[in-house]
Length: 146
Image 1 (cartoon, one colour):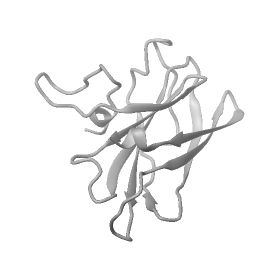
Image 2 (cartoon, rainbow, N blue to C red):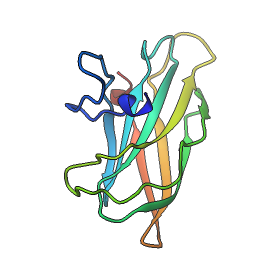
Image 3 (cartoon, rainbow, N blue to C red):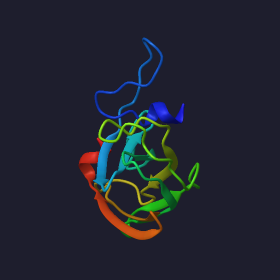
């Protein structure tokens, strides 16, 4: 399940006994929480498939969520469409996000062959909270791809 790929560190969302990939938190601001989770087998030959997970831990909704990704010239990137563009208010602010996240697939590859450079991505998010436009930026460094 997509939400299983977005389990926060220490929070397994799978059925009892299921192995759940844990996400690495890359941004938390004003209630918006962003995690990245690598698909198995992780980074191989300088390439990977990851899931970006967007959650809301605020009592107000997130609307018009849009992500843009920039990568260095040595990387090729494909950002899939998001599963949604709005997140409802969190019913338990400060304890979440507890509601299902928005998910988005990110594929990275280094077509040149070895030696492979560390993966690094710049993420730019735009969204509205209470009708006010917000822009957030984060760097997803090599430590998030291990």
